[in-house]
Amino acid sequence: MIRQIFVLLHDKRNIYHIMNEALSCIRKPIEDDLARYRDLFLQSLSHDNPLLDYALRHLAKRTGKMMRPILGILAARAFGQADDKVLHAMVSLELLHTASLVHDDVLDQSDQRRGQQSVNALMNNTQAVLVGDYLLSRALEHAALTGDVRVVHAVARLGNLLADGELLQIYNTSLTEVEEESYYKVIERKTASLFSTVAYVGSLLAGAPSEHIDKLHNFGRILGLCFQIRDDIFDYNSTADLGKPSGIDMKEGKLTLPIIAAVMKPGNDAERALALKVRAGEATDQTVAFLTQFAIQQGGVDYAYQAMERLSQQALSELDFLPETPVKDSLIEYLNFVAQRDL
Ligand code: FPP
Ligand code: MG
Image (cartoon, rainbow, N blue to C red; front, side, top):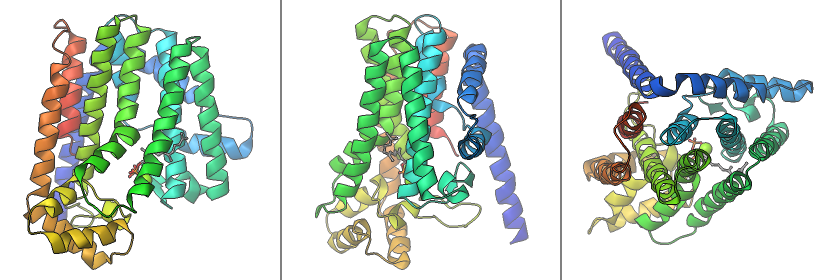
């Protein structure tokens, strides 16, 4: 057992190492831009109101892998410079994303985010909602600082889509059918929208022609779908901590692609009925554990990998028009990273 844990921890360290290597290659052509972005982002995360400052400093401790700003800055650099407007736009979008996660943890009653306490766990629900509101309004301020109404429009549209996606996810719990379309509708809104918006805004502000902006926009969108499908597959992997799949999504009543694919197969009517119970929040932990194994055995996880592979190829073809440059290489590596990441 101890040996098993050691091997798992060792593997995890290796995975971190490989992932960090991949990310530093991706970031290489935009290191300076990212450093400027990070300074500007962190400036937004302090305040003279003690409660607000407490929450903001907490959030500043774990800023994540900066996946979205990296994509937006690469999209800008594919056509020109990442000037202050681009940086303000990226800060705006990251603040909006952070606001949505702070609110999401209240909705999901989650006490963890990015390996640390969620704001609602650190403080309480009331204060977390207000912190999220503050972040949202700072996001609008940075959008305005670009002086470009198209950016303000994009940020507002993204806010619409995120809230729309969350509500659609809730609405879907009342559906009596299990099918892929409703899954894709939710992930288009709650995940792909962010990636498509950063790529759109980055290329837009760098002055790309509209047909090229459309290509980057679509690249971000498809890549965002891959990101969420990969994220959803994680729930079916054994973790070092648990030694078995966590099944957290199903415990939260969410049906993702692996289980949807498995229960849609002909003859799996009984399991489809169980999946509907999961979605209605009426399933026990044993049912979730059973369905998780069922999805794996029925090839649902393989199906999700194949869907992601098809989408990756589509995303890649959106970049065909770009000249061969280190920035294009980074965009391609970014896509590979999203589809193949292990953490
Ligand atoms: C995480 O999803 C949550 C989102 C991607 C979006 C949350 C959006 C809102 C709460 C509404 C919009 C809010 C604003 C401020 C405009 P998840 O719960 O599936 O994943 P997780 O495991 O990361 O929590
Ligand atoms: Mg959540």
